Image (tube, rainbow, N blue to C red; front, side):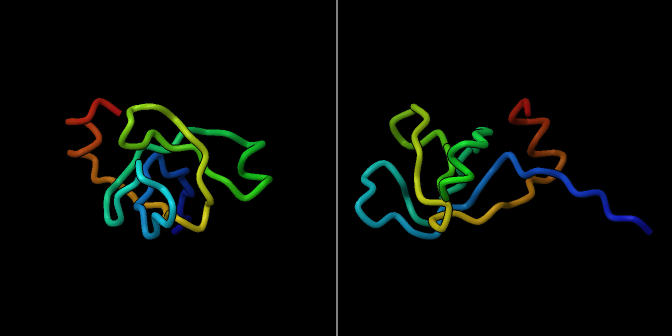
Length: 74
């Protein structure tokens, strides 16, 4: 069986050092930004409701169940 690789649209915050707009243990939407990724950053929509760059090491990708994706409209 071939496993299809999908890009996660959500990440789990595992670190928030010096970042007032991030909460450890919270799931955030991830936005695609190839330039940021090359530089070791990730773009997420944080607690302010805006998208910002954070160190990629502050997050881990997660898979959201189909039912949750439908409920969230993603």
